[in-house]
Length: 188
Image 1 (cartoon, rainbow, N blue to C red):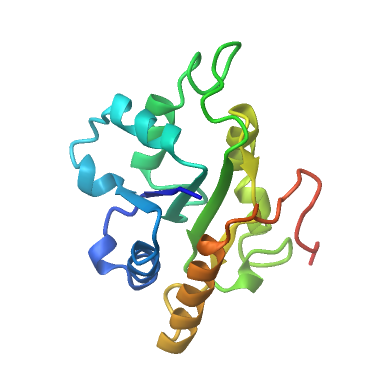
Image 2 (image 1 turned 180 degrees about the vertical axis):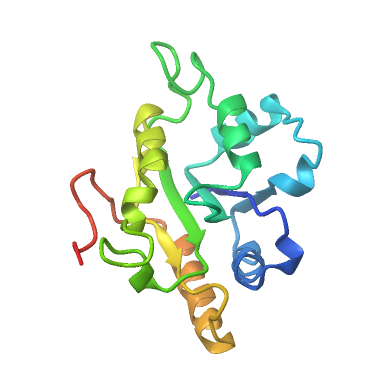
């Protein structure tokens, strides 16, 4: 199975979590990592190159830190430029049909912050709905997100465990667990 990781972190060199996860993933066969901020520091996206990379992949992963309840700006611009009508969606837009889609996100806060009664007032699954909707619009199979909580405070051992779990997940040749529209985290 060919996996494409769309990595979007504007300060990857300063990121313990995303750098560790990306480095671990880079060691796996059949994985291509496209570091958007390295490829496009001027925000001028090569749409043809990105679409070609997507077409070759069986599994597509968006890896990024959550910034103000969303993705870094370049990933949003990438979505707008690359996932075009007639190519990714619409009557003739079927290039991503039946590909697996996985989010690998990190957040600074603890898991308890992402509950209805927590600091943010929403479950993380709710904040990720736009990505789930995008996957559905282009015909991809949305998998259960891979989440790293506590990015600011995670211990080295816990981060190593998380990287190992990420590698095991990415090595799976079978379909990843799906995350249906009605399936959510607990309401706590």
